[in-house]
Amino acid sequence: MKESAVHYVCRECGHIESKWNGRCPECGSWNSFDEERTVPLQKGRKEKQTVMDGSVQRLSEIPYESSMRVSSGIDELDRVLGGGVMRPSSVLVGGEPGIGKSTIMIQMLDSLSSSAPVLYVSGEESPSQVRMRADRLSLRTDSISIFCDTRLESLSETIERIRPGYIVIDSLQTLYSSSVVSMAGSPNQIKACCMELSLAAKKAGSAIFFIGHVTKDGYIAGPKIVEHIVDTVLYFESAESGMRLLRASKNRFGSVDEIGLFSMDQSGLHGVKDPSSVFLASRRESGIPSGIAFTSVVEGSRTFAVEIQALVVPAKTGLQRIYSDRIDTARVSRVAAILQKHAGLMLSDQDIYVNVAGGIKLSEVSIELALALALYSSKEDIPLRSSSAAFGELSLAGEVRRVAFADRRMKNLEEMGFSEVLSGETSGGRKAVGNIKAALIAAFSNRRG
Image (cartoon, rainbow, N blue to C red; front, side, top):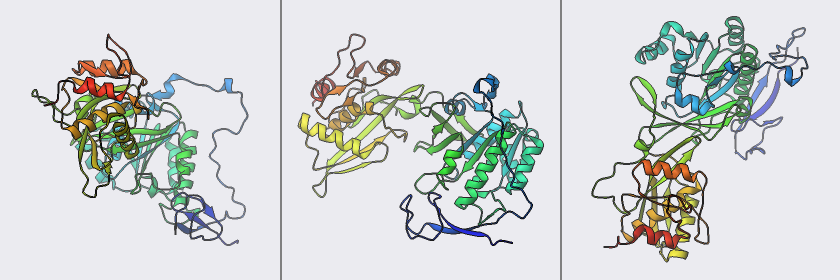
């Protein structure tokens, strides 16, 4: 019998080397290689193949039905998935511990159980613990089957035998294959188990969901190749207001621009229908304080208003420092430089703090005009009018440029009660502001003192 093969796998990216290296040539990580042994197949034993069909067919002969996509019963999840759960497919769901990954998955299975058999595979909780959570969420426990064996061979046989329509693996890091001589959760185990179960699920016509742990940097733990194996990758994020945000970083069946918003209580996760009510802080009738500006952002098919907050104070060291984790610090620095060059606002010796109400991260260029107004308002201690809002991109020459979906943004802000909207777009009898100077004059006229 041949000895087991030895190789070294990077725990950060899954790169394989025949010899141990101090630094991974693929991702650059130091001391990240772990030794792994692969058990060779016994003589006379054939490797199990889980392929859907080995024959060659014309693409026009492949059957396709609209019923292959089914609603998960959770509107916000359907939105991010592209309209519902596709069968067959494989989905990877990542997020911080306690954010609600297991909760939303078992809620989804409860809803889908009315259309097909469902299977919940738990490698982290006992059956009684899963039952307790299901009872707390008021789910139909008689409609969900649970399986607590995370051995790959046993799981594959179970899927082939009962052929469930929908499967949840909680979690990917607990799966174990006897053909890979390493502990569960190692890069090679994760890769082998994910690939095998994805193929087995597609062969059975099932949709399989893998729950994955995340690293301290917020990325799904394990080799990056896992994200290439699955059809869809979803990330759960937590906002400061207690909101849960669900985004797709990869989706073969829909857009990656959509965002799902959830609130969580004792009865589970619930979709948020009106995002503006969460991301727009209550405005007092007497007005708003300095350093506050409002804008409208577009996430996929959804448009909602948000509040940008800025605080500008003299720097203790005399050198500018920027503190912003909701808006990219490079964007804040660029907008501050534009204000200094084209509006004469000295910010190079100031500390700048930027936040977004509700804790959502903003990456659109359309927020730059509102950010500039918030910085100017804070530095000069002049509040904006509570009826004013703004959106637009700022060029390095100080111009206010047009942005996509201007009509949607304008309509959203008007619905929220903003009667004075500044932008680089002429609309509804309103003239566009051509540059940052004109925007500041329009926004702060008659406001000094």
